[in-house]
Length: 185
Image 1: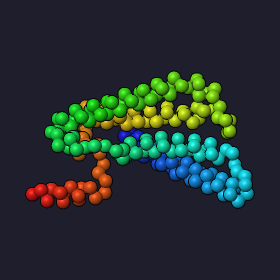
Image 2: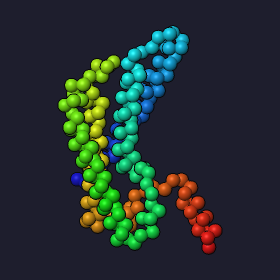
Image 3: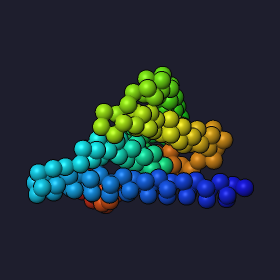
Image 4: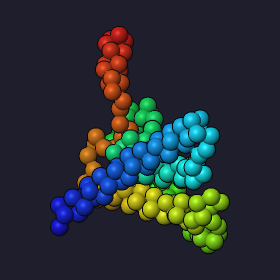
């Protein structure tokens, strides 16, 4: 059962990565095409500006979900990595709990704005704005589930010491730190 869930999660995030790529390709095609049409033919496609903005909104939020799953968000681990294990666990718990709280607020804000966005229509394309800002529901739920998963694993003791610091080091950073330690010694 767990393996089926893991495979489903894997394919869900692969689909999200594909959506990011499709949004980016659509943005490039629409903006570049519109530029060519304006300069070469003195005309343009009116919906391309608006749709490229909407795709950018979706690309940003979907990319944030994928980055959160992969641990790719920016973080500062200068203090946390020097703390004892118990203090790291406390910091991770506080961090995940605060992110979960922010996701709850994000969901509630999207819900509060739902009625306004349903009746608000985009000026050029003419679609309900909930199709654009409704991504808040998806992002807050998915990120909230990721937060709950980390909290569950932390509370039940199923998280390794390596995962207590949630920052993924940039390429070459570990080598630079080793060189600095060699200089200090």
